[in-house]
Amino acid sequence: MCLAIPGEIVEILGDDPLTRVARVRFGGVVKEASLAYVPEAKPGDYVLVHAGFALQTVDEEEARRTLELFEQLEQAQQEGGP
Amino acid sequence: MKHLDEYRDAARVRALAAELQRAAARPWRLMEICGGQTHAILRFGLDQLVPPGLELVHGPGCPVCVTPLELIDKAIELALRPGVVLASFGDMLRVPGSKTDLLSARARGARVAPVYSPLDAVRLAEGRPGEQVVFFAVGFETTVPGVALALRQARQRNVRNFSILSAHVLVPPALRAILGAPDNRIQGVLAAGHVCTVEGYEDYEPIARQYGVPIVVTGFEPADLLLGMLMCVRQLEAGRAEVENQYSRAVRREGNPAARALVREIFEPVDRRWRGIGMIPRSGLKLRPEWADFDAELRFELATGHVEESDVCISGLVLQGAKRPTECPAFACECTPEHPLGAPMVSGEGACAAYYRYGRKHA
Image (cartoon, rainbow over all chains, first blue to last red; front, side):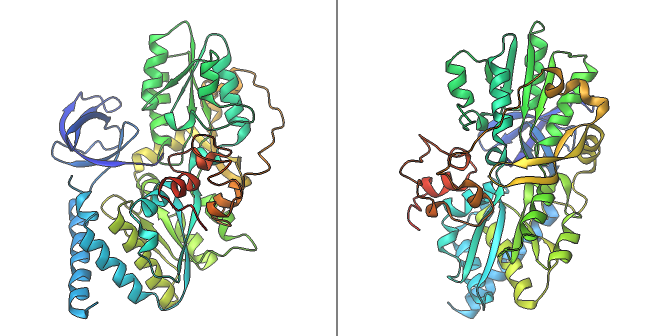
């Protein structure tokens, strides 16, 4: 029910804030999603889509930091042995 | 797929599990609130990767499972009325009410339309001006903004044959009820990441302080979940009880202000009964008086009879994290996804369905 999937905005349709939608690519599938709650989103951005609505734009900088943290932990593991 | 595959890498998951093993010097008991996280934990076998002393308790975060019997019965009653079409997310169709479910009612002539988005229900109403379309509005904070926007569009376009039956529920009041129970055993909490994309996590800060429990906002992929557990365990080992955000690529502290504003313009909190748990104060949402013309409970006079749960099913205890699905005498014999006794065996997010589907059939 709370499943939300990240997808890439390939096109934005309309300019009324209430009815603006984007065509969002999830792997090989493209679906429409409302942009009413992420008015700043633009083509190329990744958005989290739930039940036909983009709920949030994925913050690329924060994603990069999380991946860096993973890499540090993996490095520590390798150095620390099993 | 970007923003998914990086969090499913097997070597990464193993490294995180090893780090968790190293961090957990003592046994701890964590609750993941969200049913989607419960399914991910079992699907990816994370329950078999965590240290033996780390117990994962499954929370009540399955809105389908906690929708009270009487609301399901009302939805079925509406669907059976002439001139009414009940639009619903597909998850609700097989959930048993007191006598039947929506899918069986549809076989008897009830008009039930599965929809992907609440906006589809508004379009359905626009296309059938001679009929009433009622949207069965089930879901946590993640789902409410979509329903709020559907209502705003319906009002703007003067779609007068659209209304909603609200079964919306809120996480923080339920979390307070669990952590405040006299026999509470939960020592740390993984908060549901997608609920927090909308609502943020300010509301969790006083809860962490009051109950002395660390709360980590956590995503849904295997690496997200293990990192959330690791952050929670590190807090517990250090004697801290704060709110931290593992899922920062999707969640800001303030959530999504535009969504929150519209939700508050249209809905207000109400006491709500949770199936299997009971009444939790101000844990549901109902339409504000200025939006009451869209309230199906006011538009249609609906019967409110007393309804009884199955006396075999222990879903209430499962939803509170007090028992595991495998501790139910009916699990995997009388009660299966094909013949469910309780909602957690039906729902795609129910703990019983997750244990059954992923082969955890023994206590």
